[in-house]
Image 1 (tube, one colour):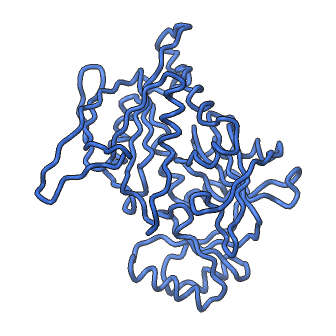
Image 2 (cartoon, one colour; image 1 turned 90 degrees about the vertical axis):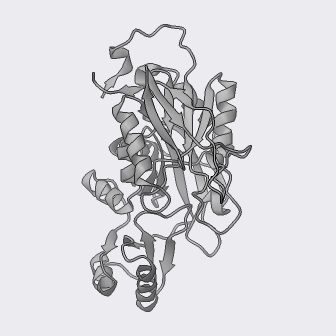
Image 3 (cartoon, helix red, strand yellow; image 1 turned 60 degrees about the horizontal axis):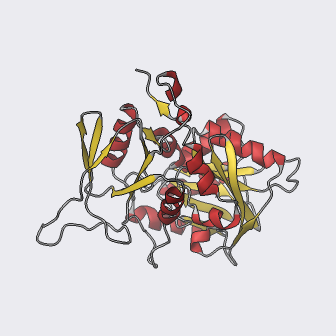
Length: 352
């Protein structure tokens, strides 16, 4: 990849860019009220900065090349940005086509989801195609794919000496005891899906071998090919979410673990507050984002006992981080992110 400024002469008066936010309004997996999307924050902030935001939904979306760009065809959205699907009679309509080009548009696939779970292979292919056509897709499909696999993320951490909880894949329901032995830890342990978890759903603390076997057997009964992981349990009172954008920390927050739980997801009701990162946590978060190929990611850390001298654990990296929680405790991170991309010299483009 080469910088855009290697091919075009940028003027000092940089014109505003456009953002195409592609969501999947039907991605919710929890049987609760719909969570608040980060989209309103992006819309509000972009308007303040004089940027144009246009919305589409992955469901029913298709595109075609036109002169100097592409045309996006999307089903219409209601006032709450929920996709309006075809009715039972098969009647439907599309909103006005969205005309995009490589020099003026950033593509934000906020609803790409997980393959086979909340996302379609076709959606990934469309975003990969746009990348190949020279569009700025935030983040890259390689980054999304890596972050959506907790096991591959674990292997990436090992490859680059990133401290992370010990993790083993469960490859068959009858191998659970052997997996536990290889993990070389004690109960409780954490059972999670390698992909497809959402806002903490799909993560369970297991207290005994009897419960572990039963949970694995029941899970694989209903989804034979679901990738399951067993992970050592590290007791904490809080974790740290760090938003890294273009090699810079733009916000961080302390997320308190919910009572009688191990999860700290703000979207599930956990409380968040401001936290000052140590220099070690800051530099490690930036390094992790770089190794994962993330231009805008949420790095989730488990703090060490000595935060000043001991590396934190990297729990996971999120290629589609929510902005609601961080916006409440940090200094206008969304504004800092969108302002950053006014400098088109950092936009990636394919070598011609």
